Image (spheres, rainbow, N blue to C red):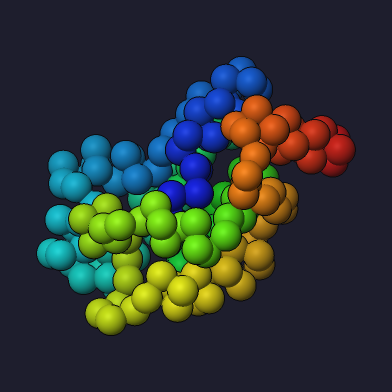
Length: 159
C-alpha cells in the first residue's frame, strides 16, 4: 500500500545487502518524462496499470532491491516476473495508519476508482499482496532497523 515505507526501507535494505536500489515509480517517471499523477490523469487507471505492468516487466536486475508502486500487484505478468528474478516482500501496515499518512492519494499518484475509499482499496489489494508475497513483514510500530533485520533474517532462512 502507499505510505508503508517501500522506498524508505528498500534503500536501507539495499545498503545492508550491498545491492542497488530501484524504485519502479521513478523508473516509470524517467521513461515517460511525466509524474505518476499526470499519467493516471492522461491514461486513466487501466491505461496506467498497463503501462506500469509493461515497465515493471522490463526491470531485470537480480542484484537490486526493487520497490514497486502499490498498484504493481494488479500486473500479473510483472508480479510473475518479479517472482522469477527475486523474492517479494509484503510490508503490512495498519489501514488506519495508512489513512493518516495518505492525505492526498490523487496528488501522490495512487490508482483508485472514483469514490473508492482507502479501506476499500486496502481490501481489494490485500489478497493480491498476500498471493504474491514470499515474505510478509508487519511494519507497524517497528523501527527501520527492526524491519530490515527481520527481512534479512527471513531471506537468510530460505538459503
